[in-house]
Length: 412
Ligand SMILES: NC(=O)c1ccc[n+]([C@@H]2O[C@H](COP(=O)([O-])OP(=O)(O)OC[C@H]3O[C@@H](n4cnc5c(N)ncnc54)[C@H](OP(=O)(O)O)[C@@H]3O)[C@@H](O)[C@H]2O)c1
Image 1 (cartoon, rainbow, N blue to C red):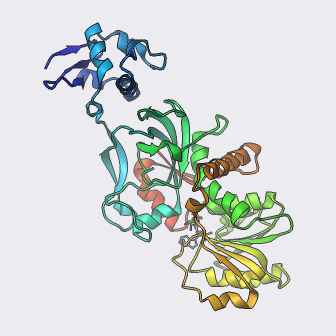
Image 2: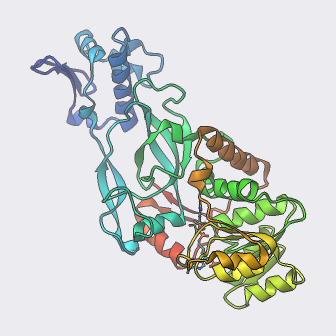
Image 3: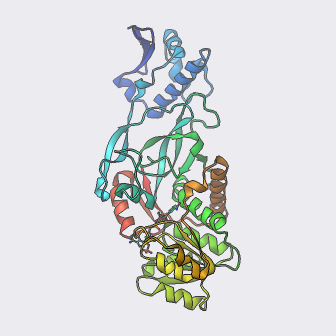
């Protein structure tokens, strides 16, 4: 196997079967990762286009690297590259067995390089959502075991798969709602699942609002269309989704009633536009809603608490009201007999963000409306809790024991 080396410590040569090889010496390991990744990107390009001169690439972040290679080395690189030369490890949270927060382990993982239609993203901030708790506990079944949790992150594109257009290295992108695996320093994503983050929005803010904001968007704008004059009930009004629901519904002209567990959360819900706040750990929320609405009831209940509130939520509805059961933070609600809806001709739905962002157009529209609402000030994002990624277990414990309000974010 003939090899030629450069001053960078990168060596190019050919294996016995004549396949070109790029090797990384201890010296080149000192180079920044993105430097190495830029190299790989160019290698991939040169594989697709044998006439592509890596040394002259206008897209190269570090063209000096290539000029430092000998002519013979460049010609080898130009042919084909073996991506395996870049098998780097990144840190990630992994779950090997279902259970409490302690099953979230901080480990080294190898994620490989993006294939066709994929991008590799270096995460800047990762949003924590209650759905991550459901997967960790086994309420929802993870597609693999072990698995890395997380459905929402914002990061920088550090590599793009072969042939991909429309995304480039350096783009800041956000994703929410899958595929799972966001609790990682870096991850591979289908390019079709990410959206660009407007430069005016800080990446940590974007990671705090993408999934929760799109949830508020579909619940208020499409699932049941809230309009001026409606009266609505939001359970867990100071939570991540709850805070955004209250602000947005208030801006739409609704009278907003919210429930919370503590006085501190009540103060936040008030600030977020709740006209009436009920501390449901101290007061009977059903009688309070009846009192507030003069016995008529509300047009819609957005209930994410589930087991503990579901029955009471039905009782709070007016005739032909909408029961939107979109979560189960306290446990899965008991089955509802159809006959329970008859006395008031109620509507009942159990919606999920995934089904409201199926098409690329729906995803772009929902994300666009969220980012526009943040930029215009309609939504103030409460980034109340940030944790290092390695401390995801602590973040889960706090979310589950109702210690948090607003958004919870992990920083790699
Ligand atoms: N269907 C969808 O597409 C979709 C999308 C996103 C989120 N969700 C759901 O929306 C809900 C909110 O998600 P989030 O991430 O923003 O969480 P979150 O609301 O910030 O946290 C959950 C809140 O629920 C309340 N809660 C009441 N009983 C609880 C109990 N026994 N254990 C834990 N919490 C309890 C707590 O508020 P208090 O202390 O004030 O009671 C707690 O802070 C979750 O149920 C989630 O599954 C659904």
